[in-house]
Image: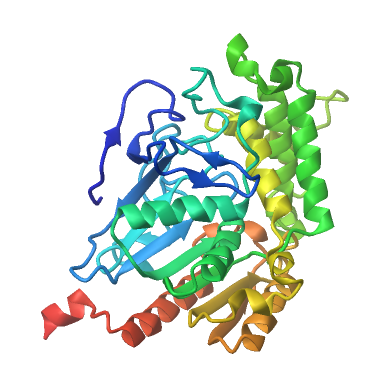
Length: 398
């Protein structure tokens, strides 16, 4: 991993002292937020992989999804599991860390070291809780830009991400058209649909209905609203899968029994699976952060910031795009990707569009999907050639 200003480790919670690199901006470098507040003393936790080349032209920013974090391709410090995109990022992978310098930061509003509701408010000495200003996708990208400036990188070779990460990719090109050479938005949309807002609201209400939530001040009472957060995760996780995948994996199979128990135990395998997803999630995520990041997605409507025209968001950019969708993704269906592609065409930007056949649903972008891997590798190879980035292994073979 690359260097940075500070490595914070220890037994204290990840929210304040992440097991990763972290840059802490002072009050003289506040984050201007869409809520109309300039937030000082902002921390941005991040990981890097690979080596930044001499002219700083090989940097790829990976933007994580809703409940992801900066641990893209290393063992997660809380779960011990491989990084969430280790299938995509690493030596010899499509995003090849032997060739590219990869950066991923925890979003503002998150809970893995970047400033969020679980972080300590320096003015009170207590967790921010709901006193934290509401965060938008634009705010997340502004904080990432502060990090990229800190690292001395003017132009990113590529910005890539799926789901909420894809929203950040689109916002990056709209906000910093001269700083993004290529963009890879995956399984995403230019605005959140009413259906997706509805799913998020069910999750938020589950969290807030938990008696231990205490109006968002549970940390002051030494509590955690784990039951509500687990239900929120269970509800959301259904949207990440497809009916075909659920039927193939679980069907109506019973869990460790030959007949129904005529109780409300987890008789079916799918029930047991969802309960596991909920219970394991609460060990690594903060309930208030869940409220904040889901709200950021709900507020995202890129065209609304440009007079209702999505194409205007990309006027003046020269970024090369590859837009990817998956046939069984009903959370961000292919129609959302086509809307993005049409806008990019209208803005006269070079764009490739790939719809990948799979029954793995929205989560397909996180899995080792061969066509997706090949698409990513091919797109980055072409972009690298266009930018004049030489493959070190190819050079060594000459």
